[in-house]
Length: 170
Image: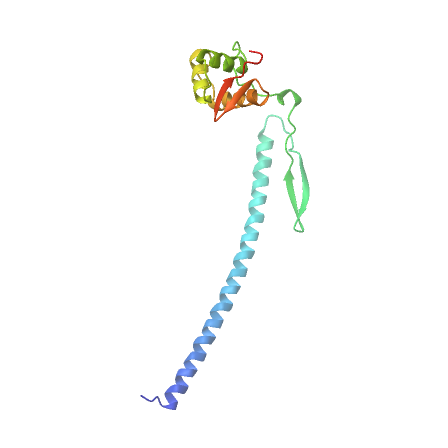
């Protein structure tokens, strides 16, 4: 089957026209991508302004009007307002209290649990004993961590996840 030269010329002309349309669409896509990027940047700037205004309103409504500590940094050539971390008063920097008053120390409870059992035990078993005898809501990780520290300083032995008395100082 032979295609005459006129039809072939028309087909080539159509390919050229379609290629030009594709180029035009590509240029339009790039223009829209750039416009979108600019709009997103503008939106972010306006959102930052709104956030700062809302923060100022909340601070104005507070019983003690206190400005948050802040400083200005340069990030990628732009100035950015950064809130400083609040200073924690020395009185509140102490350790938080986990154990209720009136209970023996965690090491005493662990040693008593192991003496009562008469054998090495896993932290879960030690925790169950402590819960039954002294502290029903003791966190499991508290007992396990304390047992690990006792083993680390030599007051307990640790073998395959079982903690036992080592006979020294008990």
